[in-house]
Amino acid sequence: MNFKQKLVHLHQCKGASWDSIHTILKKDPQLHSLYDFRSGSHFSTLKTAASILEDLKSQHIIERINQYEQNNIGIITLFDPEYPLLLKETYQPPWVLYAKGDLSLLSANRRLAVVGSRQATVFGKKSIELLFPELIEREIVVVSGLAAGIDAEAHQTAIRFGGRTIGVIAGGFEHIYPKQNAKLAQYMMERHLVLSEYPPHSTPQKWHFPMRNRIIAGISHGILVVEAKKRSGSLITADYALQEGRDVFAVPAHILSPYSVGTNKLIQQGAKLVITAKDILEEI
Image (cartoon, rainbow, N blue to C red; front, side):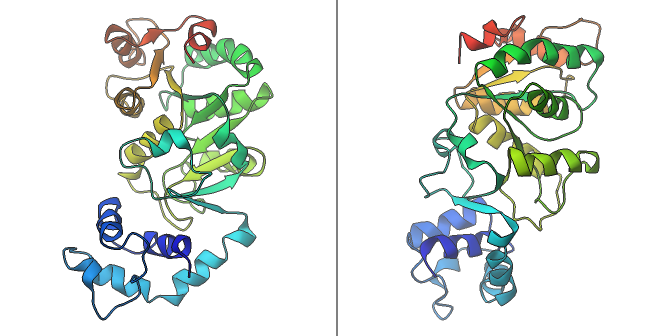
């Protein structure tokens, strides 16, 4: 096995967290001794050593990885040239990205994350319809999380106006969540791009979603929050964007609407208020 194959195998082992992989790579940067089970030197400080060692012996995992190519699943590691440079520069970038679709979108000049409430209102949908034509005309690639509500609206509107879009999901390709977006996800896998840091067989876990948000922010040049409640996953994505020095934009809305509390608060804290597409274009 070469280095990339070893890293992907390690990445699919139970207990192989970001930190544990980092520990192993510090001790053996090229993974030359990964399968030297006699020494166990890689795992001496890891509580999950038993699980990792068991899965490193698993032929089933290797066979599963070998099937990815015939299922049109691309594998991009942090050390590959096609890994998104913006994401590589973030805190704890994913060791491995699994991809289905058009990988050229990862090298697009301008990518804008668009996120918001899972209960999109008429106002939120109309805001996207107002802003997107000019953004699409200027070849902005729309990034979102394939969630219900604003996320799905952003993907669908980008497609409807002839634009390009990237979806970043929690869990793996075999378990799209929510199920109502399965057809949209499949369409995007065929004609646009869907990414995940979780192997395709992984079922979405609660903690996957905030981790997914760091990738949405990380691969984007800026982030637009359309609607968000006081406590919203969209605000987590905006926080990641701020930490990584990305531009944060927000659509202002009615102060009595619960779906405006988060966006109005972002503006109060310094996010750029967006009324037209030009408010975004002049920054990114």
